[in-house]
Length: 441
Image (cartoon, rainbow, N blue to C red; front, side, top):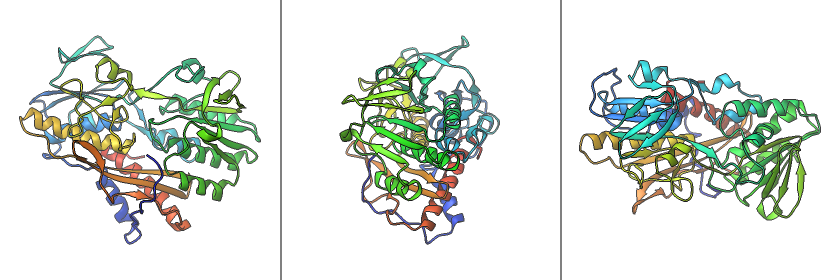
């Protein structure tokens, strides 16, 4: 995703209640038939879902909504899932970790999904089976992978798993997020928070810049002489004009962004000394160093044989079935689905398309025509929200953005509009979490 000048579809003519209701509806699209929730033990087929985030949990839920007689098993090691969306608000002091935590009771109790809290260790595509860390083997007719991302350790010189314990990436919400928060809280006033942003593609294109905003907000409240330095491997980033304008309004010169052409590309990390070196040899020392490194699809995707040389998963756009292995569907951040971004909203929408395609295939029917929507909100301050939106369809055999759909927040918006978008962000988060796990913040 990149900044563009397409008009923002203003919602100022409707009430906040209507808007939040609309957000809830949007997070439930596209819809598939047979929605009456039911607890069923019969089976019209066996589907295993690996990964319990926005993609996997949604897929499991919507498979059972479409056909309660399916046997659906969700494999997810964590009993509590912490969302990357809104984890930056935790860093900014605006939300507790408990408010981005979600469980799986609704999937079990209301929809009859079997939830297994263990790790999927291997996949046998020929035998249609999944080997689990607890020693069990699951057999499937269809398999859904929603493995998220893994870090490309050492793709950035000096940045390995040990380095991440000193210079956290916090690009998977949970312990890394809490570690980074402790480091920010322990930083001396007058210190520098250095954020290293990667090349595309990576999870959540606006995420590093929202993080810089939230950290700057925290520092302004508690360590006002401190600053944020962003060293970026790109010259352009999502919602760039909106972010830089908001930074200037709220934080003055306390956030500095250095892009690729300004020697912002980091090539080496010295986590022990909290130092980074850029392409042209400039060394920057941080009081807190946050490295968002290069990424790839979650490792189980490679074990399944669905990744290509890019490290990501190419999928059939009409169903999100793997292009390389039959009967395996992949949704969420692990996929190659440009121009759709790697976002929680997209994972949720892709999961519904995959669920509809699977239900149709098991019945011997053609998959329904898919479409997807995405809205990505970012907070620059507690009452300063911005967004980018898009609608996508399959055109000429590929996913394409519908011309004239979506767009950006207006660059000249009033403080009232920025505040409304911050409220919409909360409404969106509550709606999509309710849709995915049956729980709000």
